[in-house]
Length: 451
Ligand SMILES: O=C(O)C1=C[C@@H](OP(=O)(O)O)[C@@H](O)[C@H](O)C1
Ligand SMILES: C=C(OP(=O)(O)O)C(=O)O
Image (cartoon, rainbow, N blue to C red; front, side, top):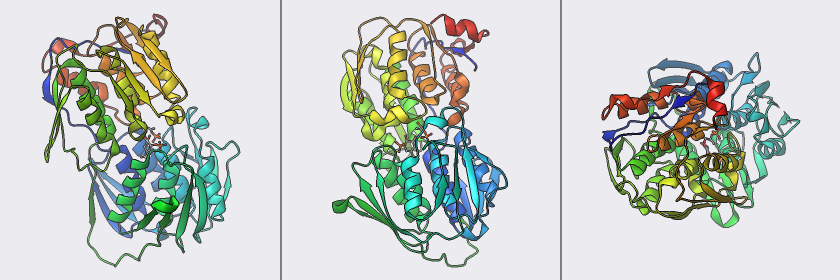
């Protein structure tokens, strides 16, 4: 754990912050390219723990991947898939373990996925149950990783019923590999499907790679159709990955919190990522947003002028902490609703966010699926606990650019999706004042106990 003390900005920024590629798109594209006959060139990929876990797993399963900067050259095909020799470590990457669990059903042999301590309590029992309905043998004693999928090299297809309330990643997992089954897979959603924009992203990307998924809205079900054989061709398929919209919430939150004007290049309304919608939440709070083919720029209001808001963030739940962390700077209350599922992400994010806002001396209330911050009290200098969660570190790091005395106790946990986060933030802030770099805090024990 490497603690860093944040230095507030002495004046607003006017700058551009290019964020790395999308985690969600990179990890989907890797699975789709692995199943695509021939070579695929994925451009603008994210390099981070989550995408490395995905890449390493695919290589262990027989897929060739060449790394050339942010371009990945993938030589794929279902016939290349083989059972790996050893267990595969997937850290705390939800997309990796869920998407790979689906893919593993196509393998001619067993594969075991193991995760870290946080992953050991992240459920995937509903996905395991769906694979069993498709005739796949799976050992998963706790309903969370570790688990072993015993593929036999042939997946028949068929009907499954799967609960929609925990994670959309289970649905994406079946959709990404489903086209390679011998027959169509019909997925009946039980209840309401969470994080729908991610399922739409999956459907779009499956189509981009030549597959087809039909959404029967009246029946609350999906059909994953059998993929047509890819015409043999030497042409290399090129697929370009968008910058990460969830990551872009940090530059946008920084602009909102400090009255800055910040552009995030290469992302706009055409994005296939639902989290781009975070800019519109900030717009409702008094920020000015302009988008073009080049990117999106957000201008924050003068300090002290950011409005409060009541907002349902169900569909953009990875950005809950981006908003909650800057809520103490608002003129009125910020109430975030319908976000029960953030309790089963990297950590219980609702509880973690409430804990840290209280540590900052803020007035916070919460229920099972909501939290409300009532600003007014001064932000107390303190050390923010990160719970191993990259988004806790990045969100509260942004607050530390607006108010003094905030230490982020585990700056390295951003490696999950953005290893260079604090370095990039420092470089930008140095444009207005070189003395605003985050300072290393030498004694982690002291940094933790002063809270
Ligand atoms: O499919 C994806 O790429 C993701 C889906 C979401 O998870 P849930 O479907 O579990 O809500 C999101 O929180 C996660 O960061 C990425
Ligand atoms: C929830 C997240 O990740 P994942 O589920 O892919 O581990 C996230 O990145 O916020």
